[in-house]
Length: 496
Image (cartoon, rainbow, N blue to C red; front, top):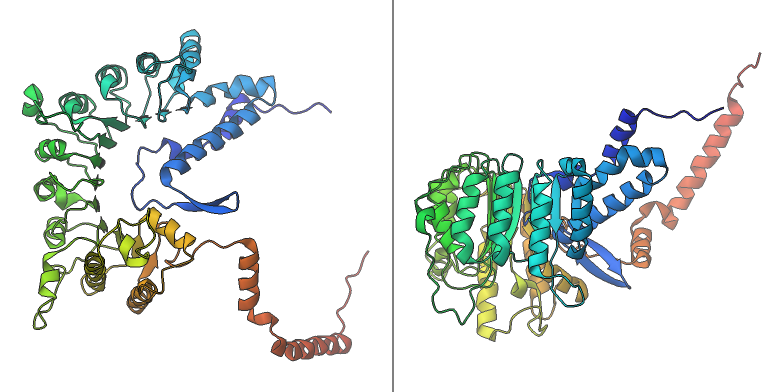
């Protein structure tokens, strides 16, 4: 009997089901996106969302390729699907990609995502940054339906020509960008955003200013007079020295903006005027993530953002109510009024709250007095994270991945320095409130990964059904079953 050959349309549909739709989602990962544990060489390591996206793209490509290359018929039908997501770990392969798209221009029509990881120019690679720039521009020219453009290394020298190519050939289809550039590129960035009216999400990283550069002023020129209107932008994520960009963005029209994230890294000066930005755009936000070392008034922030459901901040911040707490006659309060909509709270930093001071490389070296002050600040802030101020609160998540890896290495919070007692207090507070205290994997805070032997032993200890005192009950139950079977045997079905 000859084999039945499925129609091309059905096979194409099946092949498309193998693809992960999350790869093509314009939504960017946030601080609340969960990490996960994996074991390598008998050591547990934490995989962050960026690394997870890397492996996800590689795995899906490998699976799709192995299936499509099964036979010539499948190859002919599904070959174009290999080009829907272009993930380049080695930019030297751009030459081959450019050649393929030049020879078969129809393949570029299927490209929806381009993701290039960090590139280091070297003589052995025989490829310069200019070569990468020219290759990317050539590929963009061939991709009229490109929706996501992500590049994980600084493109400041090449930003202008790459942005021009995107604005010329992908301005209708582009939904998400991930760029890393210097603040000197902000004028060209503003012009590019003005041309990309259909953007849904944007992640922008601003590189540090060279220490030998004395002139740090930015000349925006005509870009300063642009009143940007981005009707589709729902998610904006900034990292690094973003104060100049944020000052301009405060005056733009962003009617769809729902999610805003700011990671100021280790910078302690020139903090952007967050409150000014939130005065213009905070009323519509549902997600707000502020990871900065300089403190920002939480009460003022939440007054400006009444619709927030998720809020992340740094509990190391020294806030006005901490000063009130030193007065025994005063009642310290974190907020002016309860916030009715927040269900999830994320906490950055907290290294000093749970890790022993002597673990160098994990927590910065501070004096004993400074460490105690930060720990007291953490305790006072956490004591306010209750349903008194957040009536809808469901989850508090500790976001610091370095902290979680340190806890795994240390087998839990340090007991001698009072860190374990602090974890117990926080856990008990959340339990009383009916709030779940989590780590960055989404697991309960304190539930660290275990080896298989440890997990099996714990399951044996917890299995009350196998305790010896139950053996008598089980024996009596079996005897009763036998007796019932003897007294009223089950009739067998009649076979005709």
